[in-house]
Length: 325
DNA sequence: ACCTTATTCTATCGGAT
DNA sequence: ATCCGGTAGAATAAGGT
Image (tube, rainbow, N blue to C red):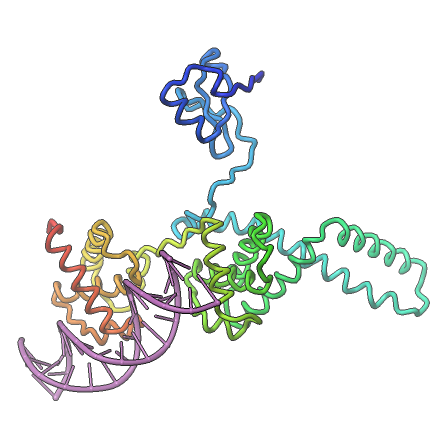
């Protein structure tokens, strides 16, 4: 493919080109369109705007990768899975270095052992001099693991934290900030994303830094990495609550409908999604005469009665206006 | 780094079915 | 008599200056 790189300024400025030039996108000629400027580059691939033909997808997509995190589990698994091996790899190396100390103890060792030892030294040297950031990462991962286990956070969650931290290093967000604060913030964000949130106060108790730096680091991190801290969809809680409270399928469908309407009317912004789901369950139980008291729902969902009350009134309000039975 | 705002929780009480 | 709805005050988290 002989592509000629042409800047947009070389050509008549159509409206589209004017628009694209500001975003500094590169154009090439598309063989299909015979020299016309129809190719746009985005998300690491060049596509022909007219035919949707992908010309080159060899580049790295630097787009946000966490947006689909809570929505599509399959995607989540594959991404995290690939990156975990990177984490494990580091850990493996650090173990090898640890073994080296024992061998260098002065006792005479067999030539074969000496050979092994030499190999280890070589690797250690390469490892250490090659990338000074690696040591930083190693220490950070150790911290993440320590705090994660202290808080009872599951493995995938710690791995996500590791990935986040790696990104902060890659994007050079660290200078001027303590490593400890950043690792804690990464773990905090990861815990949120995995629906196993812990309060900042709890994190403070296991971290070696104060609450404020953690908070600052977290905000900085969320902003710079464009983390999608999108509130999880209330519908995700619905099935669990419905089965726990033995609500009929019919009622559950209605509850889903109510939640959808609520979302469309922006009732959910800033609210606890679990609270909304619990409220929806309460509503349908009442509508269907399947008697559930607020106290029962509150018990099963760990949402306070007060919250259920306010949410269910808000939901009913918009459902009365926009709900087409 | 400090202050403000919004949300949720506990505790409590009057009112309704 | 139990359940519901409202309120006050505290704790917490997120955003803004």
